[in-house]
Structure formats: structure tokens, C-alpha cells
Image 1 (cartoon, rainbow, N blue to C red):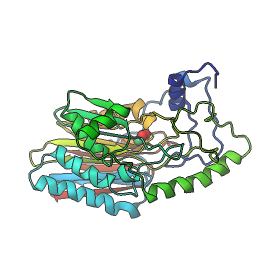
Image 2 (tube, rainbow, N blue to C red; image 1 turned 90 degrees about the vertical axis):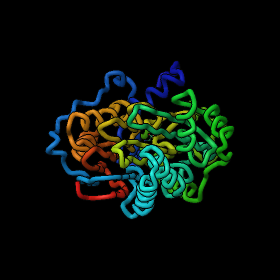
Image 3 (tube, rainbow, N blue to C red; image 1 turned 180 degrees about the horizontal axis):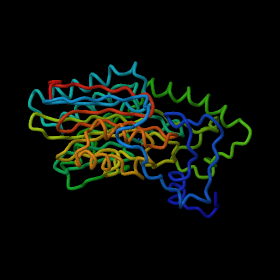
Image 4 (cartoon, rainbow, N blue to C red; image 1 turned 45 degrees about the horizontal axis):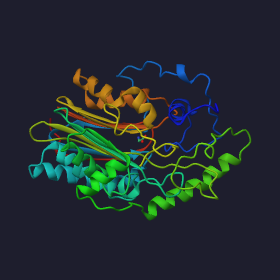
Length: 368
Ligand code: GLY
């Protein structure tokens, strides 16, 4: 790594140059070598698979469905045994629509349930970052009329999706960092660090595994000490990096055929302080329009590079079913990076991930 590299350049290099690895949470399973020389030319190859041949995927589902519908995901990498919380979130979103709420408010309600579940990496379960103290979260929402709002690297709120919903009613589209946190508190959200026993347990388990990785011969690990930019000191016993599960989300279609999507995350990658993933980036983590709604989870840097949700939405708008579109996107994602997608369109729904992924669905009618 060049000594002249500034922190902005560093973040770009981290995003573009991290050597891929297998773990759905991006925890490396072998020594990681950061290659810098050829980064600027790295590009994802054009998709080669036909939509009719999405290849084997650990998670694939979808069907025609009529009426109100909500689909949720608990983050790529979450095992199917954790689907109960995602099912509960989907039911909450459907119930909201049955009570007359529009798709947007229903999708917010669904994601609040996911944020309040400490098993998932959002809100109460959000990852603790490298300094064993910081929790920085992103959340976003989009309605099919083009309305979009997001918060990035927000801290000290229990439900970041509520903060994103507040931004929607403000003159702004995206608020970040301390300003976003203060805005949320001034708007009535409680000042609380959403740490949980589950998040601490995840942290400890990963630390053990990561230590083994860094003790392996041949590791040319990125120099975290040198670029340490957290406001808290590097923990004395902390020679490793860590990170956790992934983004949760909800897509919904209401009785009027309106669509919306919401996302919330505690972040997924090995990161410096201030790293922002795909969730609050317009067109990356989620997208909604008159043809449907899409929400992603997974390797944020790659999702941003592909403008994944917008890309999948455009396929749906061109007539490809939500089910086919998300299956193809998951199958074509780089195999060494985790991704999951949920989508609804006018005719039905789809779920796909290149790892296991707990999800939920609540459907008014299965007959199209
Ligand atoms: N997918 C969540 C993130 O990369 O932050």
C-alpha cells in the first residue's frame, strides 16, 4: 500500500481491491492479500448466463401472487432456521397494508421488526465495528413514485429506518454521520446505542476465527493500525478485523398496486470508520418504480458497482418476472461475494441468494 495514499484513496482501494473470499459474512477463511497495482482496471465481466439458466443457487423461491404482498430478507448468510423473524416482519408489513397503509409505510413497518430482532445485522443486532465500540448503520427507503431517502453511518438510534423515514419528510435525500444522528434525535428518536448480547457474541466468535487467519503464514494483511481512523483507540488485544451478517429488508405491493422497498444494515465489510455500503446509495441497495420493487443484501461494494437494484428493476420493467430477474442477478454475481435479493412485481415475487438466506413472505392471495 502506498505511503502517499490518502484516506479517500484508501477507501476506494479497499472497495475495489479486496481479495475475494468465501464466507457469506466476508470473514476471510485464508490469509488475505490486498493487490493494489491492477485495481483501476478491475471490472465485473458482463453477465453470460441466460435468464432461463440461472444455475444452482442455495436460495431460490418465487411465484405468482395477487393482491397485497410483502417479502422480507434477514440478510444473506442467515440460515433458514432464522426465518421466523423474517416471516413475522413480512406479516407485520402485510397487516399494515390490510389496515389501509400504503406499501411504503408497510415496508418501513416490516424493516422495523427486522431491526428489533437481535439475531440480524441491523438496529439492535447491528455489528460492532473494529474498535469493539462503534456501531454505524445505514438505512434507506424508496417508493414507486421515485421518492428516496436514506441515512448513512448513523449512530445511537434503535431504528435507522425510522430516521430514513424522517429524512423523506425533510428537504434532503441523504443524511450522514453526526448530522444524521442529531437530526434523528431532534426529530424524536431516542438517543440509544443499539448494542445487544447477540452482537457481542457474534463479535467474540469472529475474533477467534480471525486470529487464526492472521497467524497463518503468508498473510499480507492490510495495515489497520497505520490507517486507524476510529475516534476510539485500537483495542490493546485487537490485532484482527471483524464484521458481521448482512442487511435486512422488505419489499411490498399494496392494494393499489403501489410498490416500495426498505433496507437497514449494521454494515457488512471489514471497514474503517465512516465506511458506507450499498444501502444508502441510490439505485444500489434498493429500487422501486411502477413495475416493482427490489431490495438487495450482500457485498456492498460490488452491489454499488453493479447498481444492482436499479439494474434488476430495469429488467423487471422490461417484462422479465421478478422471480427470474433476481435469480439471474444472484447467479451472475461474482461467486466469491455474497448476495441476496428480494423483489415484487405486478404478477408475483422472487427471492434469490448465492448463499443461504432467511426470508419471509406474506401474501394476500396466491392466485394471480
Ligand atoms: N450490504 C450492506 C453493506 O455492504 O453495507
